[in-house]
Amino acid sequence: MEESKRNLVDEDAKASLDIWRYAFGIVDMAAAKCAIDLKIPEAIENHPSSQPITLAELCSTISASPTHLLRIMRFLVHQGVFKEVPTEDGLTTGYTNTPLSRRMMITKRDGKSLAPMILFQTSQEMLAPWLRLSSVVSSPDSGSHPPPFDAVHGKDVWGLTEDNPCFGEMINEAMACDARRVVPRVARACHDLFDGVATVVDVGGGNGEAMGILVKEFPWIKGINFDLPHVIEGAQILDGVENVGGNMFDSVPKCDAVFIKWVLHDWGDKDCIKILKNCKEANIGKIFIVESVIKEKKNTKMMEERDKKLEEVRLILDVAMMTHTTTGKERTLKEWDFVINEAGFARYEVRDIDDFHCVIIAYRS
Ligand SMILES: C[S@@+](CC[C@H](N)C(=O)[O-])C[C@H]1O[C@@H](n2cnc3c(N)ncnc32)[C@H](O)[C@@H]1O
Image (cartoon, rainbow, N blue to C red; front, side, top):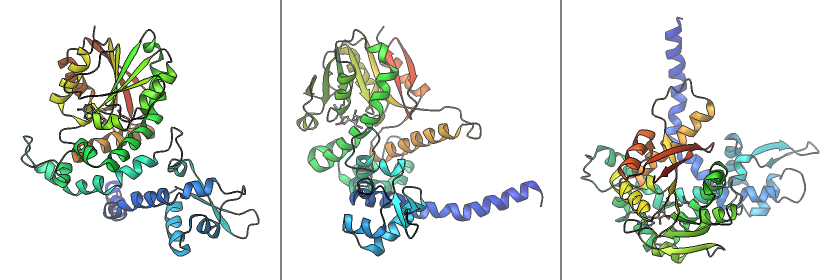
């Protein structure tokens, strides 16, 4: 068979299997949520002997039905979440954790676990809008339809956090686990830029996790965690951090530098420019923007495997912004250049933190 025909046959054979991912993609999310809800990674980690935990032991530790647990574990082992290995006597097998399953430990606050993010994204509130994605794509840009999240809940995400404190708590925990993962990387990459900076405001700082990490890294800083008043009501009380409630569309507390992570991607260009202008008016010398930068030109064949995966996360987040926010989006560098210039910043630089996020530092002069 000639080369091009063989490629087509191979592609077709692959498609006949790949298509099932689209029919049942939710199974990965649901099984991960199940493992987190039942604290399976913790049960494996805390197993008293150094041996892998057998199915019977796991069943008794988490009080589960053996037949159902066997099937969930079989799936999660197949997906590479857990490992199944022989016990020392070789008579049976047991389960061990992997770096992936350890990231599903809800009890860990180690800068790796994303369990709170998985629980948040698998909540009913976040799942329901996905079914309306086509309505936003087919709606003209002026927005003749309400965005999917608003169509389902009658308000946007921030309105729902005010009305539903459990949902608010879930989003804050989800954001905090990303802050624990990313803020130390930002601190390492930008250490030199915090010299001589006395006050930093974290705009849209949620429960204060990010600012708590920054003041530990840079103890000379006075930190202000700034967010909507109902979010600040539930914020952590942390040494060196003052919690201030307000609206970033009105004004931002005075400071030397602003830190703003995963906030601007929730908003379209007009709102972004307004927020950035308000940050500039807070008298700052610089602003640390922690966000994704989508690659403009890509040749996926030439991209390294890790770069491809990082870009996949950015593109997933972009579609999530379409589903869960009204005008939010992930931006290319050209799009960042536009909003930063329109807000009146003199210059900016981008620092890589070996993550799907990077840091854009925009300077007032
Ligand atoms: C996606 S979360 C990011 C949280 C945090 N910066 C992080 O990355 O961990 C966006 C944050 O913006 C806050 N926010 C939304 N509208 C706001 C407003 N008008 N003024 C101040 N904060 C706002 C939300 O309450 C939320 O905490």
